[in-house]
Length: 199
Image (cartoon, rainbow, N blue to C red; front, side, top):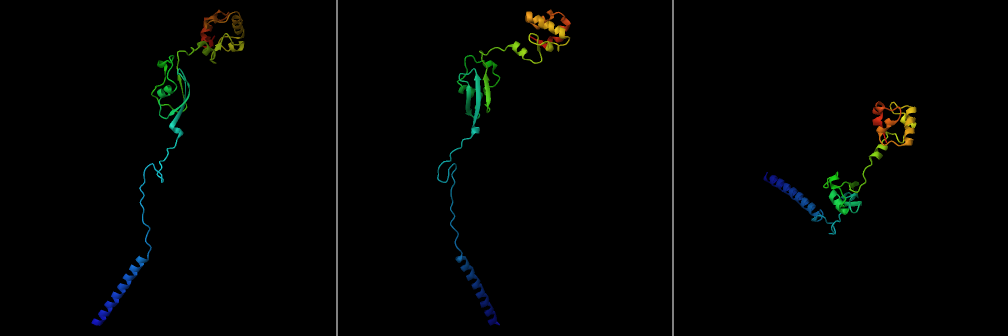
C-alpha cells in the first residue's frame, strides 16, 4: 500500500516538474519586446527643434476708407480691433476745417472691414434746398413743367395750365405763392395745390 502511494507521488511530482519545465522554456524562447523610448514634447517646436512660424491670416487686418477733413484721405489697412481714432491718425489726423461736433460716430468704435468713414468739414458746400425740391418727383416745378404735367394738379385744367406757361414766359415764378397772379387761380385753388408744387 505504501509503495503504491509512493509511486503515485512520484508520478505527480514528475508531471509537475514537466509542466514547470515547459513554462520556463516557453517564456525564455519568446522574443523580448523593443525598449520603450520616451520623447519629451516641447511647445511651439518641431522635431528638428526649429520654432513653428506663425501663419498670416487676412482676418487679422481690416480695410477701410477715410475721406473728408483729414490730412491724407484714402484707403488704409490696420490690425483687427483698431478703433476709428487710430484710423484717423493713420490718415494724418484732422485738418483745421474738421467739424468734430458733427461727427456721428464714436472715435472709440472698432473699425469694421470695408468701412467708409467721412469727416465733415467747414469747407463743405451748403446744401441747395431748391435743388432738393426740384429733384423731388412728387412735386411739380411750375417754372419747368409741361402743360400736361400742370394739368394733373387739382383744379388746374388745360386752359389754366397754358396760362401758367404764358405767365412764366414773361417772368419766372419767384415763389409758389406767385402762382395766384395767374388768371383763374385764386386762394382756394392755391390751398389745394401748394403742397404739390415747387419752383
